[in-house]
Image 1 (cartoon, rainbow, N blue to C red):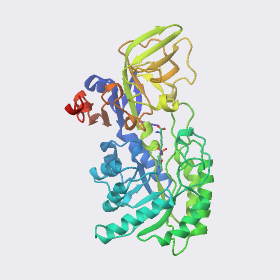
Image 2 (cartoon, protein in one colour; image 1 turned 90 degrees about the vertical axis):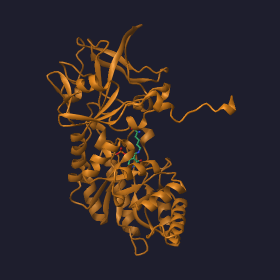
Image 3 (cartoon, rainbow, N blue to C red; image 1 turned 45 degrees about the vertical axis):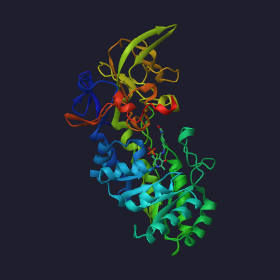
Image 4 (tube, protein in one colour; image 1 turned 30 degrees about the horizontal axis):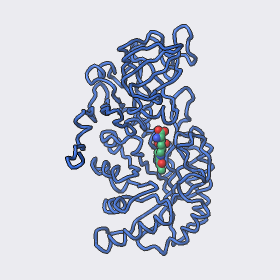
Length: 438
Ligand code: LLP
């Protein structure tokens, strides 16, 4: 579970009533619970205790410096996918020896920066990239800017269906990610000819928001036999990176506890004899955050009721982009939402099906459609959008010249602002009117 709970009819983040945060900091606002972050990190750490493992939090899910610093303090490593994310990890003093760098299109500048920073390894997506990393590492070694060859894990595409949204399916052969196992054999055979780059492991991330253990079993099964077949002196494969993807609960459909994933994965990792690298993002931060929003208007139009709120698709794009379900409930309420012990089926006398929409000028701007919510919700009420800690703020934009919401972290009975609300001047700071084009 998480640390967002109703106490006497008021939603609390740990010990803080979120009404207090809204009153003092305004809305919309992202609110994160430190306790939940650490709890979920620890759950993964414990579930995989039987094998040597390194948890590299996937920075793309939530790259807030405060969140990264909390996880760093707990011992986490980091999975980055850009020079910008690497910069964030450097900024919080994250240990470079616990950083893995993935991504299909790393530029030469980004590769150079990561090599100079001394990261643990890259996840490479193709032979062309392997060759390029070798070339850049050779150049930097000749210039004495780095001391060691680059270390990489080869990303394979095991052709496994993770049964999730097609936008976040990555391990099927028709996606752009990794190389198929046959080609991967060829890449390993060719690898020794590239100087200053050493293949030290195999990486396979099959998708995100995965709520079944079977796809992991199938994927790791294939990867482990691949490792066993190819381990040699020339190619000393010692790392097995299973990527991220562990699902969370957004609605009543419960995601399996991480221990269930570990149960099928650990024996396979043991067979491989490798150190396991995990890249969880959503599992750690997803349920650690909510988006607080206020109802601006209640509007009845035709047969429909709309709750027009002050958070829009620029704040949280997941419902518009993936048709994602986020539970929404009034912050002050005598009844509980279904994921927090409320009735699984809405009481037709007490609820009404409404669309929760933002203020942005397009029909795609919604947070929920046809959602049964308490009838009495009125203008000025606060709503919580749950499970918004992952892929929420990081995917926010300034569309409609709306400043991004603040990010607030709660610890026990106190909260702190980790990112302040963006002002109009912040949004315009890189813009000017060039006289020459007038
Ligand atoms: N490792 C790799 C190589 C990845 O591509 C991803 C996510 C992760 C780890 C972390 O996956 P997680 O544990 O968070 O599932 N914006 C989408 C999700 C995109 C996921 C991209 N890759 C969403 O809002 O659902």
